[in-house]
Image 1 (cartoon, rainbow, N blue to C red):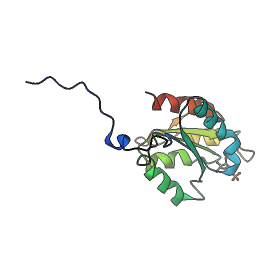
Image 2: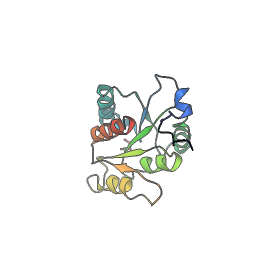
Image 3: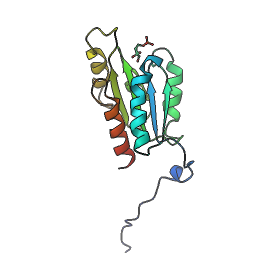
Image 4: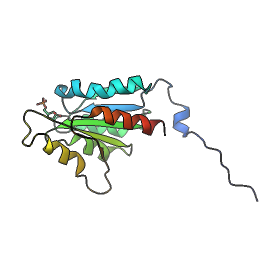
Length: 153
Ligand code: RP5
């Protein structure tokens, strides 16, 4: 009887993947989130993790979000970071359309009814089976550190 193999194999699709394909997708609900969310990109850049960064709103561009998240794995992405404020649906919608790990970043907004608590609850209170890992309010840096750890795990 042969010994069980202890060799590990890269997933077939990874072997064919463009070496310069981004591994982390950073998405956010509004252009107004960009300055804050770019901080995640800067951390990933410093960590040598390739990323892409896009604006797409779960409420204003639902089809774009669905398409992006459904294609994310096939395009080589391994983690999604999603930032949004107010009724912050984007991280949850991303997790609904992709089986990649999704890290949600609740963002504060001048329109918040509760100093950002609305976004925190929107990101955290996901139904069982649709997981979103949440970092603290306005803390995209931790999302990037976590994403880098997942990519390098
Ligand atoms: C959310 O509403 C966005 O993520 C942003 O944080 C907030 C305000 O969006 P804008 O009105 O600035 O586009 O959907």
